[in-house]
Length: 197
Ligand SMILES: [Zn+2]
Image (cartoon, rainbow, N blue to C red; front, side, top):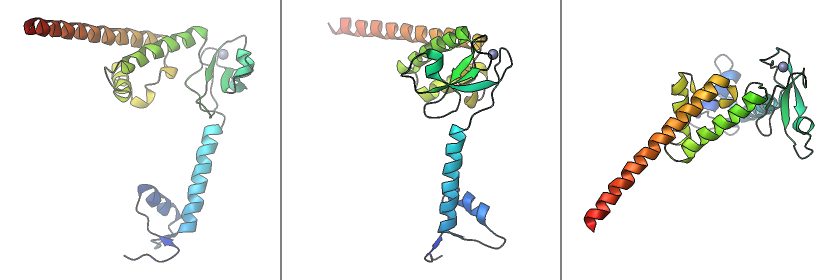
């Protein structure tokens, strides 16, 4: 195989996919210009995806959510992020935040009680992987297994009250067991030090 100027051989998976898109019957190679154009389009599409407003409904009253500045809802001029807020707000007080720099919702809309519960569950869950009982990635797998759900659905922002409470309970159990094990280990060490003395 030899390269000609102005042509690119597609080695990586992405380039292969791009080649598939541009290949005419019998055409085995594509211009580098064609690839660049498609790559630019793909970046543009990704950006559009991140900033596109999502059509989501409020799970409590069924109304559509609208994107509003968080500064408006929190009455905090220093907030620069956006929230998906139930269009019945403030009658219905459901909303959800967005991933930083995007219009992608952090989860489903929730009222004040559920938002607080999700914060508590997240803190507890974070304390599990921060205590190094397991890595962050393993902790998400453990959470998915706990509820028998796919990893992509293991997000506290999607959880309702039941899952939040169950997660807090399970995290407490893990932390307690870990504490007991540490206790046993420290006693074992005490034994060793006593023997050594
Ligand atoms: Zn609502």
